[in-house]
Length: 136
Ligand code: ZN
Image (cartoon, rainbow, N blue to C red):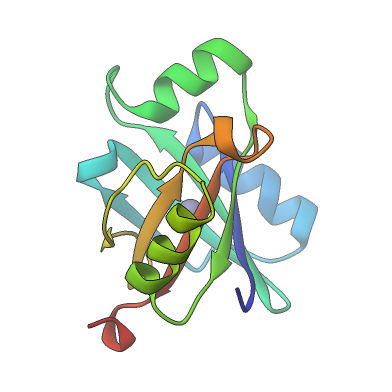
């Protein structure tokens, strides 16, 4: 893994949280994007070399909806940049980690992504991601 790419934070109302995090981080979000396959609207803040990704559910079967219902708002996942998501998934599975996605899928912000199951990672929901163009 290369570095922490972003930290995902689940929120109830992304418009309200955009204002809150703009004050907290002293910078405005630079984009918002809906990821239909995950049932979320996202917004991104740049903090130095790392991004903060806010996630709000768009419907009740979204994983973010059930997370917020169960645990409330807060840190949802940590995303690590990798060179090749599929190759890294293969390595992680061979080390015994359980993948939620069996291959790289399109994510927000020009990335391909995959998630590991938190029960295999000390309950830390872990995402790996890479830029779309470098993935075969
Ligand atoms: Zn993410």
